[in-house]
Length: 169
Image (cartoon, rainbow, N blue to C red; front, side, top):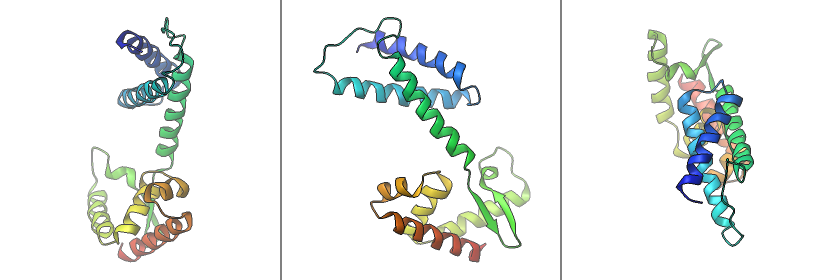
């Protein structure tokens, strides 16, 4: 696969994203396309022993790129929908997405400061499990692989982190 092939695939991928994933931002499109092209090149390199077919009109590897893009876009959309919500004393639930928004309300800024302080007070194991599962959107199985622990351990650490955060906040 040469640079011309990658250029053809990049153009096809951009068109695919604009057509099929309109809800994502341009920056998200760029990230997904770059990651997808990298994964596609790695897959093609694994098949280096096979006869290589030049990619004309994005037909050779285009459908595979479309599948990779769709999978990455679905994961991103799923992660965006499962934004972490933290229950604070008094039964209030605060969406943490306000912490990353451009404008803070005074309450959100105070909560952000308190939350960061409370998160910092957790043990490293509990904090890592909480961040992966609750803030990054990984499920317990994925977090267990990242942390190299059992799934039950991840559940226990996340529950312990939530309890400590409830107490602290």
